[in-house]
Image 1 (tube, rainbow, N blue to C red):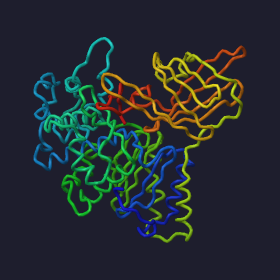
Image 2 (cartoon, rainbow, N blue to C red):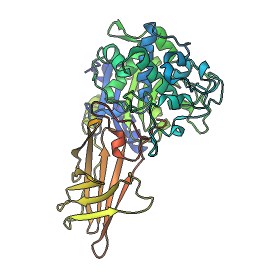
Image 3 (cartoon, rainbow, N blue to C red):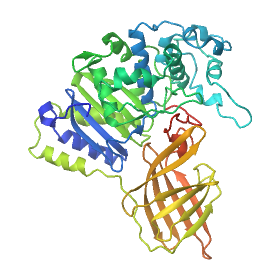
Image 4 (cartoon, one colour):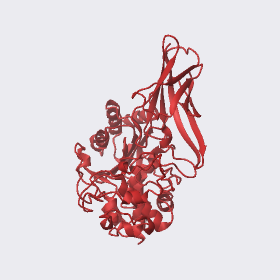
Length: 491
């Protein structure tokens, strides 16, 4: 364990505040997968909604940016680069010749603070995966993107900025972002040193997304910044770097409709918010730091209601600080945390026997189109998804979650993808299962319907299509060289 544990009352937290948070999250349908609450440097509450677990990494989406920025922070304090260095001077010269006008003025601090000069996220326009031609190194395409503003004058949340920083780390050190972080951050904090991370075809971490983190890693990195870069008496990160990284660094977010905690400024991969700052990733991967209250909240989740999730700590934990609670509150909290479960579907009808179904046409099926056939086992306790010539087996729990691991091999190594699934026949014509891609925020349903003559069709639908793309394998990050997402966007 990275952080020490303590009873909530011993760190000045009434446990009913955590219970209130759990009630609010459930009431609002925020679909938490885990949370860790840290007060005065001690974990005072932690829980995982089974089948998610403390030791299971979770796709962190844009929390990956915080790790990449921290790697840059270590290089700054080593004197390997400066915040006001032009990024073109820190990249391979043979790849920068086609940079668009304006890139010569882009500094390291502009990439860290999302003020490169684009009007919006330039990444989706790069078309990095093409069927008709090899793309080669991604960096020239990134640097060829047109800048709409002078660097430093406009904010736009932009994956291009952090990808460039990842490439700066590789060029300056000859190693990856994780290679820099492993001895200087992960090992001293007692965190898992092998962090799965999506990469480009040349093996560089994307930087802006793709890191898979256990929840305690999110909490521990938040605590490190709360303590000014110090960890158990050792100064790991320069406190001057931490101070600059966690304050507003430039123009404000111009995106219409963004919540109040997305309009208070952005530091070096940290958003400012009322009462503190945070790192965040799409669908509820959060590192909320409230310095005034010496409080950190880490979550993994599957929600699009990000502002509601950000509000939880301020609305329920802060009022519970430094107050006495009911004598049974901690016992009730411990029981609640131990019983956290993601509800699983149960069968309500007998299986009619084995059923093979072709993929139903139309927009209701949004899993990758390569998944063209489903076979339901004779007893209804398993299914096989066919992806062309490949076949992936899924064990099914009945009102519970059964775990399976998909495997595939290729020229770029051996991969695995854990899933957990539950469901069964709900009547004599309808089979429904939910499949959790359990190291991510995402899940999809498989619904098989039989008609009067016994012919069957299948619909395969994501609840929220992953930002990496509609194939579950796009979220996998395993093997000697991890696969990059086919489509990686703001997260």
